[in-house]
Picture 1 (cartoon, rainbow, N blue to C red):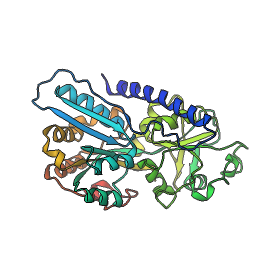
Picture 2: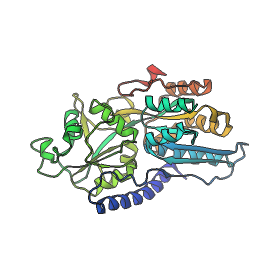
Picture 3: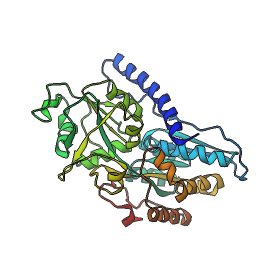
Picture 4: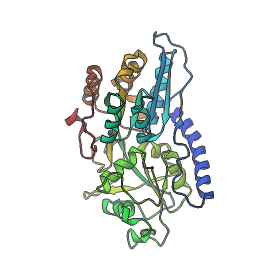
Length: 354
C-alpha cells in the first residue's frame, strides 16, 4: 500500500474521531480541550511475507506530527520483516515522553527536543536514550477557504492573537488588523502535551509553553483540521503534512517575518526561508531497547538514506544526506543525551550541532 494512501486512510479514521470529539466539546458548553483521541494507537499490526530472521515487538509513541512518518516506515518495515510488529501510538510529544521515561516504550516521537524535566525524569528511572532527527517540518497556519482576508499575517499579528494577555480580550478579527472584518475569531491549536504547541510558543511568543488558554485544543491534529473546516472564521496551526493531506479544504496563511510573506512548502521549509516556523522532527530510542535487534533495525530503517522517499510521500521534507549520515553515526555509536541540552530548536541548525 502506498504511504500516501495509508496516511489518507488513517486521516479518515482520525478525522471521524475528530468530528466526534468536536461534537462532544460543543455539547459540553464550550470546553477547551478536545483531546479525545489522545493515546490513540494508529497501529500497523499486519505483516506480510518476509524472511529476515528478525522477530518481536517495537513500541513507539509520541508526537502526532511525526506519526505519519513512523506509520509509513512501520508498514514498509513489517512488509520486509514478517515476524516483527511495530505499534505506533499518538500521545503527543509530552505524553510520549511520559511513557518513554517510565520505560513503557522503545521509541518516542517528538516534534521538539526533549525538555530538561523529561531528561531528569528519564534519568531518575535509569532510562538512557539516543536522540535522532528524522525530518524537517514547516509548522503551518491555516484558515477556512472562505476566509478572503487573512492571506498573510505578520509575526507580531500572530503574537497579538495567541499571547497570554489575549485571553478574553482579543476575540475579533478586526482586533488583529483594522481592515479585517468584524467577525468572531475562532482559534484551534495543539494542547500543551504537544511539541508543536511548545515550538509555536517558543518561536512566536518568546516564552515556550505559555499562550492564551481560551482556544479549542487537541493533541490530535485532525481535530484541528476539522475545526477549521467547520468554522468560516477559524484559524489553526499544525504540521505541514496535515495541511497537505487536507489542502482542498484548507487555506494556507503566509507568514511575514520581516522579509515579506512566505508560505510553507517543501522548498521554503528545506531552504530555511519559511521562518520562524521551520523545524526539525525527532525520535528518541532507549539504549537498552537497542539490544533488541528488531528495535535497532527499525531505528536504522527510519534514517536510511534510501527511505527518504517515505518521509516526502507523507508530506514532510527529508533531511540532507550529510545530516542523515551524522544521525546514523550517532545511532551506531550509541551517543546518549540531547544536543539541545533541554532547550529549544528555534534558530538551531542540525548540521551545526550533530
